[in-house]
Length: 88
Image 1 (cartoon, one colour):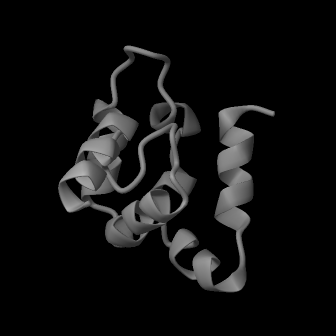
Image 2: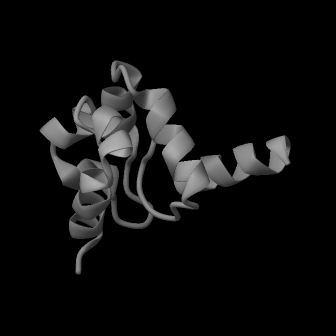
């Protein structure tokens, strides 16, 4: 299963989680941008996240579910790890 297929399954989630995910701009754009190859640019995905109304909910989800791949809430996996270290 590809990372994008796993992402789509997560986006389906339960009813509570689906409410914010239905509004996510990433669901309407190129999925490859949110899962770049190692060393690839995250710029396009982060630009989409900047104008997304559910960016905070997305980031909260990624942190709660320890998402290790992709751009979530405008942050890369490395940026999310740094955020968790500062918070914890």
